[in-house]
Length: 115
Length: 111
Image (cartoon, rainbow over all chains, first blue to last red; front, top):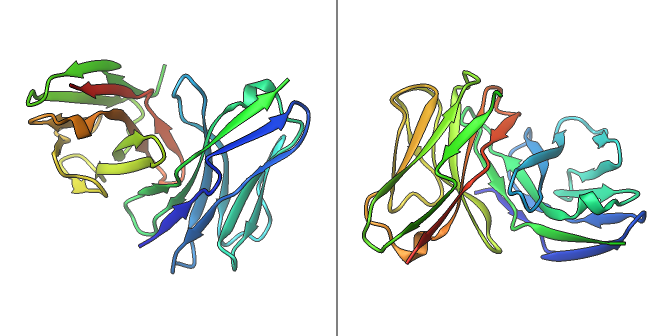
């Protein structure tokens, strides 16, 4: 069975600096999707970035980018020029192969941004 | 606004009581999911549906039942609530299985 692990329960970063959140996963599948979701105190789940495993190029969305290492089964999220509004819980998720669309989530990392 | 609506947003139940959580989406999505979020455990899949009239068990289905009689609605039922079911419940829907829309969650406390 697939698993997703986020080993950093909490992280902090100074405003305007860069922080990297770690995520590792375990799977025997070859084609899959990976996601990073942001959950602010409002509880809303917001998609930050999505990566397709067959694409070698790392996904980027403005200040957010990923370092996708398929062989190592690692999918870290880099936030550049951190802003106070980036403070939230971040979840890494893996989409199970097949036609169900099930997502498996990591435990989450709480990011604190210090002014 | 198009999206996923969960009702209620908050609820307190006594042990043994029953309740139904409603998830409604107006995007004509085929796929719908119920997750629970607990501290340190992320979101875990309870049940899901790949289309109207279909349901299937997820990772943590015990103590819950679901129904999807209409495509736009996915109901999650607790027949006899237990304190272990205290959690935040999220509904999500998807059309493409690579894009998901989440509801704003229901905080349930069982005392």
